[in-house]
Each structure stands twice: as structure tokens, then as C-alpha cells.
Image (cartoon, rainbow, N blue to C red; front, top):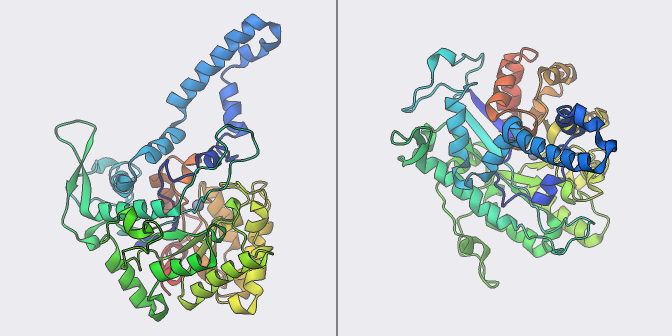
Length: 456
Ligand SMILES: [Zn+2]
């Protein structure tokens, strides 16, 4: 089976807005702190005793915290190890672990043999994994209100992410990781003949756009640069063109940004991206009140409809929250509902990510999504970052019915989901083995629906 993961992230430390990352309220949770504190019960009781002991306790807490980070926070360290890896080898790295470390997702075809005794046979066999890495336009916002000396926000121009992403895809189709016989425990990179059809992954990234970072003219230029020709596509030609372009382009930043106001020199940037990602928690307002900002989002929607470009919008009340109005902008019943009920934008193909997850466990947002799905055939929702336990699939099953099951999409939210799960392997394994959803439904949400959303 071709399994589509419609919601994936591949970034490194330079892409993410670290301040936004560290201030995620799901990174350091009361539970994590509690589990750390549980390791110090006797000492904690001594805190009021006296200053000398308190100093000693401070050191103890620091030691324990360091120990926790180095030896017990496996997930955090795994996450950091991926973030620290060179972005160009991201897909090689993930592919290598999918094929070599249990749970193994796909029987290996290349020269490295997995330990057969522990390779499980999965109910659905995955021959190809299709990833849609979503770029996030972190822009220049977010310094927060806390005083600090270097108080001009670091620029995170999306163009550097574009270069890194396209080059990472190029790298994946031109190289392979193999065990280095000369150095145990290490991998070496070897060149391979270019043949994307023979590789386990297919990669169709989504471009992150935050309209407030651009002028109206620049928004228009983004569509000319990356999406020219899309308006003439059939589902089949869209699919073919994206596949044919994949892994063929290697970029230099000067070629796509243009120097000193010169236009970019590369003219072959179309079909590198399959869709567009918007991210309300960082401040993207789907239906702004101000005229100039409204004009820009309307241009975005208009072009996406004309060119049949799918949009994915973050839809949970968490995430990289840097704008206090983020949850309001993300709420499907607020701004988005205005967009989708506008007669001009009814045909916008939109995926509400994370099925509207809310921290409190309330379901108002997912109910709002279900309502939009009912009334609009172009609305989809992905379950990325939700399938962390079988409990989720159990409750998800009760939501599905004949009329809405064609609108759900499988997604992981990897690598963000590593805050809650050990690896990408584990997330896929949980989905493939889950017995709440039958194979027909699984195939629908991870294949048929995804193809319709991406190409159709
Ligand atoms: Zn995400």
C-alpha cells in the first residue's frame, strides 16, 4: 500500500523559532516536572529548614535535572538528535530507522538486512510512504513581552527553509545511508543512481505562507514562482508533474531570492510544492478585519481555488503559540467559517489539522469541523498528533460515518509528535496495528482521501 502522511515536519534548529519552541506549554508540562520532583521527595521536605540546606538542594535539583535530561528523557533527546542532524540528511535518517529499528515498518529491499526474528508482519503492508513536510513561516514576530537586551526578533525567512527542504529531498534521492564497516555504530553516505521510483519515500512538501510578511505583489509572485501551470492540471497530470520534479532540483539561495531586488534567476521552481500551509498560532488571521490584510488572504484563496492548491491550516489550541489571538484565529467556527461560507471561497480545499484538538479535552472544535465537513465537500481534517494511543482510535471510530469518512486524512505531525511518542516508527506501527479501525477505513484515510486532497 502507498501510505500518505499528510502532516509531517522536517526542520532543524535553524528553522524553528526556538523561543516559540521553548515556550510551547507542552514541552515542559506539570507532569514532567512532577515526575522529576518525585525523585526528590525527601529533600523537598527540607526546603524550609535553612539556607545552607537550600543551597545544597539547589545543587541537587540541578544534578537531578541534568541526570533526567541525559539519562531519562529519551524522547526529548531523540527529538534534539533529529533537530541537530544536518537537514539534508533528514529523510535518509528517518528512512534508515524505519527500515532498521523495531518496530520495523517496511521489509528492507536494499543491502542492509533487518534482524528477521523481531521483524513483525503488519496487517497492512506499506510499500511506499508518502510524506508531506509542511514548512512553517515563522517570520519575524515573537519576541514576547519579557525584557531582554537583544530584543529585535531573529528573522526566519521562509526562503532559507525552501532551499533546505528542496536540497534535503534532492539528497534523499541521490544518496543512501549504509552501515560503515570501518566504524561500528556509524553510518556512511553513499551515492546511488537517481531512481525515485525505487526509494521507500515520496516527498511532497507544502510551502508555509504568512501573508502579513508580504506585500500583495509578493503574494502574487509566490504563486507565479512556485505554482505556475497548476491551473491546467488534471489530477493525473498534477501527480505526474510533482513526481517527475521530485529530487531533481538542487538550490542555491541566491538563485531563488534574487540579490538586491533583482528577480530570482531560477524559473523552474514550479511543482516543487504540492500545497500551502498556514499557521494561525503564529498570527495568521484567516479573515482579517483590516482591508489591506484581507485583500492578501483573499488573493491567497482565489489563487488556490483557480490552481486547485490544497491548504493545510493548523487547528488546535496549542502549537507554536506566539500570537495571543492564535487560538481565536485557529478556531474553525470563527474566522475559517467566515471564509468557507463566503460564496467566492466555498471551493477552497482546506484541511483542518489535528482534528481541532483542544487541551482541555473539549470537543467544540472537532464538532465545528464535522459541521463544516457536512456542508462543504472541500473540507478535510487530519488526525496528525492524535494517534498516540489506541484510546484515540477507539473514540475516533465513533465519529466516523459514511458521509464523513472520505474527508479524514492520516497524519503524524512528526517531529513535533516526538514530545509524546518514542519515534516515527512507533506512531506508524500504532496506526497499522490498531484494531479499532478496519483495513478499509485505514486505506481510505491514509491513501484514497489523501490522493483526492493532494491531486484531485
Ligand atoms: Zn504540525
